[in-house]
Image 1: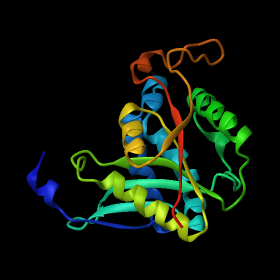
Image 2: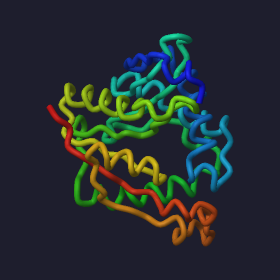
Image 3: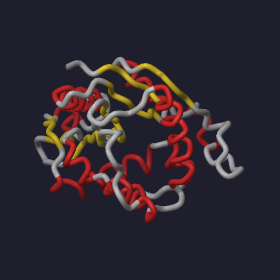
Image 4: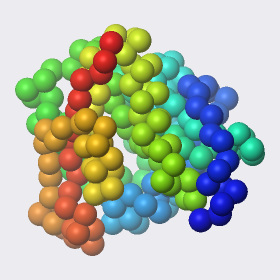
Amino acid sequence: MNNTMTSTPVTYHLFTKAEADEMARFLGEVFAHRDPTALAVGLTAPEFESFIRLYGPKADAEGLTVLARSAATGDIVGALLAEDPASAPPDGFEKLSPKFRPIFDILGQLVTEYSAARPRRAGESVHLFFLGVAEGFGGRGIAQRLVAECLAHGGRRGCRIAVTEATNMASQRLFRKLGFVERVRRSYGDHLFEGQACFGSVADQGGPILMDREVAP
């Protein structure tokens, strides 16, 4: 790892709509190259970017999404896209690549099972949607700080519960370390979508886990 990169100070702030395209490009690159579900179905960075871009107006309005920037260059080095899961989803899902359908299916099963026992109410919870850190900036606590900043903003807005779907072992370890508890899980190896084992190539990652924790007021 580059020593200069390791020592570069990082600043944190709430996302604004002027940063929508930049955040979409950043998270698109991170998730297309590292997320097991994206890798399994062959999503490209531009395809993932299109999905993230849908959430720009919602993220700006709700004030829960947090960005980390290099103080030296001003570049985004970490992002946590967060939302109120009880509010209306953005428009435009029908225009996304059909490659997303298996991902929506397996993650949707987690949410459906979880929500059956815990009905969603507007303003009550914060959904930690996409968390990514730039290559070369890992191991500096950026992901943990992004989560802490997000939960602090959520707590000030009256949120009581934080929820996330952790899709790989590394993120699952991170969220457990931060006090999140497993509630529902699925298996990549066992999951079928329209009769196809779409996630067989990432079965070594176990499967996605829906986790939650209380948000301190």
